[in-house]
Picture 1 (cartoon, rainbow, N blue to C red):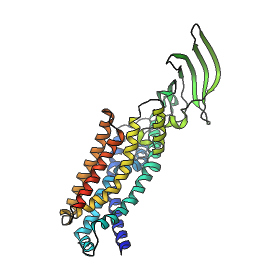
Picture 2 (cartoon, one colour):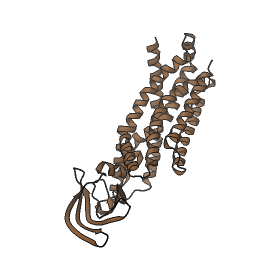
Picture 3 (tube, rainbow, N blue to C red):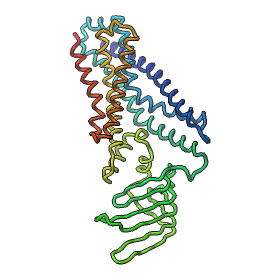
Picture 4 (cartoon, rainbow, N blue to C red):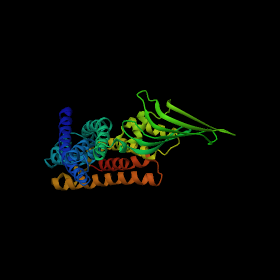
Length: 355
C-alpha cells in the first residue's frame, strides 16, 4: 500500500511540476526572444535569435525548477487535499512524517533532473549559444572575434589582444617578474595560440631581458612556451560563470586562488548552483505542509498565488544576496545557502504545527 501511495503522490507532483515548468519556460523563452530581437545585426537575424532562445531553455529550466516545483506541488497536492484524499490517508494511519517521506521521493527525482540540467545540459548549450550569437553578430570578420584580456600564470603576466574559442590570440605581450616582483623581461609576439597539446605557440617573438648592468634583446621566428593556463582554463575564463559546469567552476576557482586572483564571482555561482539544486528537494515537502492548512479547502487560484509569492520571494532573495555578497565581500557559501536554509526552517516549523 505504501508503495502505491508513494507512486501516486510522486506521479501527481511530477506531472503538475512539469506542467508549470512548461508554462514558465514558455514565458521566459518569449521574453528572451523579445530581448534578442531588439539587437539583431549582420548575420544575427530572427532565425538565429530563435535558435539562441531555444538553446538557452535548459539553463532557464534549471533556474526556474525550484519555483516550478513549489507551484506544481501546491497545485497537485492541493488538488488531492481538496478531494479529502490526504485526510483519508491520515485516517488510515499515515503520519505526517511518513507522508513527507513519500512526497520527498518526487523531490529526489527532481533533484537528479535539476543536477543533470545544471551540470551536463544547460551550461554547454548556453556557452554554445553565446558564442553563436557573437560570431553571427560579427559576421566573417575573424579579426574582431574575441576580446583583449590579461592572464596571470605564476610570476608571468600575459596580455592577449584577442581571445576567441579557436584559441588564436593575435598579438601577445608577456611580462615576467622575479621573486622580488622586479621586472625580468618583456616579450612581444606578433601572433600566438594554444596547440592541441596545450603548449603555447608564439610567432615572431622579440624579447627584452633586463639585467643589473645591461639589457639583452633577442628575436625568434617561432617558439613554444608552457604555462599553467591551458585551453580548458582559458576557455573557462572566456565563459560566463553560468555557462560553466560545476567541474569547470571548481577547476577555474582553483586556478584563481593559486594565482591570488579574485574568485568570488565563480565561488558564488558554484554554491548558488548546489543550493538551488538542493532546494528542489525541499519544495514538495513545503507544499505538503501548506496544503494541510487553509489551502486544503481553497481553490487552485489561492494555491497558485501562494506558490508564486513564495517562489518569487525565494528567487529575488537568492539573486539579491548573490549580487550583494560580491559587492560587500560576504562569504559565497553562506549567502548562497541562506535562502534554502530559511525555506528548510519554515518547512520544519510548518510540519511540526500540523495536528
